[in-house]
Every structure is written in C-alpha cells, then in structure tokens.
Length: 299
Image (cartoon, rainbow, N blue to C red; front, side, top):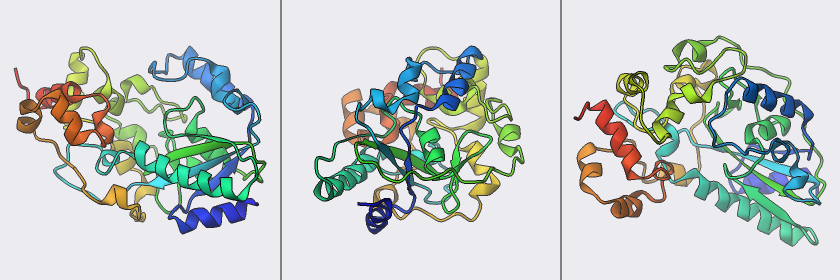
C-alpha cells in the first residue's frame, strides 16, 4: 500500500484533499503553544498537557504516520442567516467520522494488522498544524488553513495509524497578508502575526457559558450571529470564487436561521431531538436562547 493508492480511494469517495503528516514530536509547535499560553491566548477548551498536543505516540505508541483529510463545507451565501456557515448542514463531527471510518475499513482490508485512531475536533493534537504538515493547505493570518479549491471553509479530521505512509511536505505558500481579517474582526481577536486571542473571537463568545460583558453583548448585537462567526473568512480574498462542497450531508436539509419564537417555545429535550445532529446543538438550547435574546434586546 502506498499513499497514492490511499489518496485515489479517498478521491473516489469524494475527498480531494488528503495528505500524510509525520508523527513528530513537533518541536516548533511546542514553542508556538508555550508562547500562546504565556500571552493568555487560550480558551480552556484545549488539551492541557502540551506533550499530548505535540507527540502522536502518546495517542498510539506504535504510530507511524497520520492521515489528514479536509472536508469542505461552503454551500453559498444566505443574507438572512444568523448561524455560521459551518452550522448549515449536518454536524461535521458525524459526517467526517463516517468518512474516516470508511478509509480505515478500506485500509484494514489492504494492510495486515492495521491499527488506527481517528479524531474530528476531539483529539489532543492540533489539527490545523497537522493539515499544514500534510500539505493540505497553508496558514492564513487568521489562523485558518487555506486550500486552493475550497479556501478556508474546511473541517479537518485525522487518522493516527501504525502504517508508515510516505510523508507529504508543507506547501511553499502563505496567504497574501492583506490584513483584511485583522481589520474586520469584530472582537479584534486577530493580531496580524499569525496569532489570535481566542477569548476575543466572536465565535468563541457565542459559545461560552456564563455572563457576558457589555462589550460582548454589543458584539453580538452588531453582528447578529447567534452561533459562530464567518467575518474573517468572508472578507478573505482567498475565499473568493471558491468551489462549493460536493459533500451531500452539508448540502441537504440546511438550516441557516433559527427563530426566537421556536427556540423559546420548545423544551431542552425537544431542542436536542430537532437539532441533535447539528454542530450548533452541542452547547444546548439555553446558550442559543441567550444569544438571540441579547441580539433582540429582550428584557
């Protein structure tokens, strides 16, 4: 089995961006993480043990390579939406895991004693760093990974495994550094040096629990997004004239807006029943209701 045969299979199931990253440890990433921590640029949702974020062999002792996949989700523009674009279709955690399982099932048939562990947002490793190492795309100033065909509207999943696939190289590219993402970020979270303060990111603010400051309430009211934020991606020149996703789960049965009357009238249990397969549901009904009430200035 070689990496080209693997990538050919992935293309056949609809995944165009697949690359192979090595198993580290990632010393350069360790320096980046420590710098972020010293500057207070963390949310508390990250893996606390740095070694687990830079050393895949702590996930799988016999790891030999990491298969990294990009899942494009852009479906177009909707003027009246109050949700981030990544929330429109089926929850990407569910979709990406289905694809990763298909890849692992295929490799299990082709490779004797194939072992694997796959992750979509739920693993300790830094998925964007893996995507960069695997040649999937390159970093934007806003910290997103940019691909040539789909821009930065991608999800990332990865498979730590015990087979030594040929490792890909990072792309010799950077974003054009126009700094539009810096200029238009509503919370001034993007610092212009490939760093960001995630606590000031509107997407994080819409998902956090607890009380809001007046500044945070103003951010919500001004931008009218009840979950997530797309501004740094929407203004990015690399996201102009990009291809739309061909992944049906992100295209079918889209939800682009939630109405206050509905959210207010249903129970938490009913919210989970209706929206449990959507990425915006993980924080529960009350976070969504709170955000809408702030935007509508409900007492």
